Image 1 (cartoon, rainbow, N blue to C red):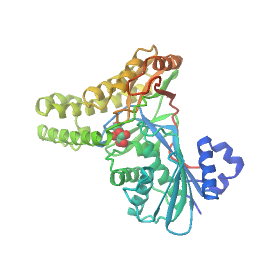
Image 2: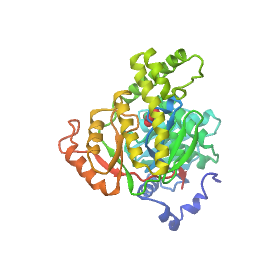
Image 3: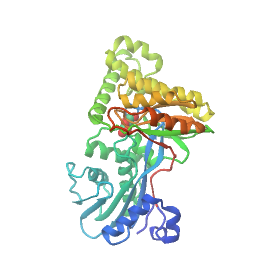
Image 4: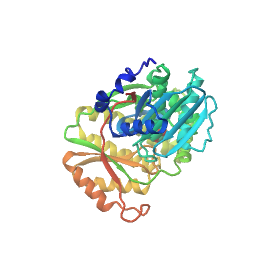
Length: 412
Ligand code: GLA
């Protein structure tokens, strides 16, 4: 088979080049594939999870986001087989699932398999012909911690299909297709950020995405001596789907209010509202809706300020924007929780931490912090000593790791 995205797979599976390219996770997925299906995969795709540096709850109303792809990934190994059956094994769930081509059940008992079928059904909608295949999937993006394991899975499936079936979507098409899989099939009304960064990520760069026209700019992070930490609160996100969809509706209310208050302006999303407009809206919109609008409008502004600060190496300004983002998400958008607030507070007391905020949809999941390299140990120790929320079993604390900014989804 000729594969357009990836070099010749047979070549890459030769033992010498394999050892250079494969990490432990990939090796495990390939070995499990061989054991489960008694043969070698035709293609192996890898898709990263993400951390959003800033720009939260702005993507679905045309705003700016600034995510990075991380070295936590989903690996998907697949092999064509004769017939109409798709059968797969998930290492993380230790489950096998199967379906017939064209018969995709959104209520399938294996939740992880719904994401696979969602992508396949969207591919069929754009007239790609799916063929029977077997696959093995595994990952190290923590599930339910807000680092986009689902978008990474969707993108891993799509990328593997591009290689296996011999077609190539452009980046926007691929991201939008995976987003539709999640919106239409899984039922989560997410924005475009997670799927797009999994497709567009670039080593050592953050990607500024303009969610109105989906243009992107790779931002080189110019802050020598500083690193980014992820702190997983270990509070698994609850209520996120329903609260998320509620926030989207409230933002739509905000757009309607802005349209009626500023009839001379063209307003299709909150992106079209400026910080200067807030005063006018504050006196006319429902107080609750206004606070949602205020978060989004000020967050868009913070994203652009953070980009400038990262490019010029102004770490204090980066930090100030991170803290301000957290405060806005907590007070105005109301998507934080006590665990995330506790972590941000603990970090803010550590010398050398320039800023911290919740990342992702909220209601649990992770916090990120930008901090001086020589403060990393102190930050870890402060968290281990002080972070023991009631929601965690006695003695347990958060998990901390350094962000390694990685490349986009690819076939190996
Ligand atoms: C989830 C969604 C994204 C985005 C974030 C919040 O991760 O999938 O589209 O809306 O929440 O910024």
